[in-house]
Image (cartoon, rainbow, N blue to C red; front, side):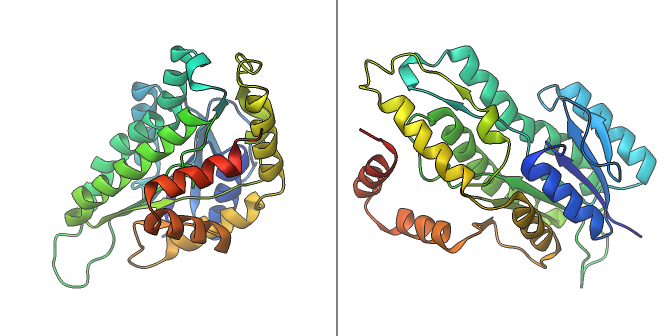
Length: 273
């Protein structure tokens, strides 16, 4: 029996790459997105992940159609750049609603279905389901002028770690993947807030331009899609994965260097004078 997967944000960027990799590997793949499109071989549903009722309805329909849900990959999100003091609070809340609570809404709808798939017998137990949440290196490494994106990803990290322990008795695994820079339309779609750039001596626009240059030279989304497939198939996966040697090294340094030094280094790297 082919496994059934849901991929959010699945019509572009990381989500589309993951959906294609899963589909080629034999999964029955459904993607959620606000807009249509994507791949003809993949079932796309028009679902706004910020609407809990819409999400619940779509998940229920997939369960009725397929009989089970084995995997969820949460990729939906967007970015805002700009100085914290000049970012409209409503825009920041909108980002958190998509990037963090969108993941929460999808998982909340899927968990009862996966929990019902938990095998009753002890011994060599088959996994009841798997959740993969896409975070970012920007979670543990708080990026200046992308504070709310970093905050959303840090929230996903903490949420995922707690969720993993809550669901472990039901044989549902929760894994977080923290990519670094990736070449996707995410860069062009970022909402740039230029207000206050003169007050900050031009540092907002210069810093964001450097970040976007790094993103455009980052990992191919297809490489990351295959990486997500690999983690989806890994027995007994770890709670966190960071693809790429450079970003693994960054996470290692963040864990082991003094916090003040880490923050100073991030400032030196990202705040362009």
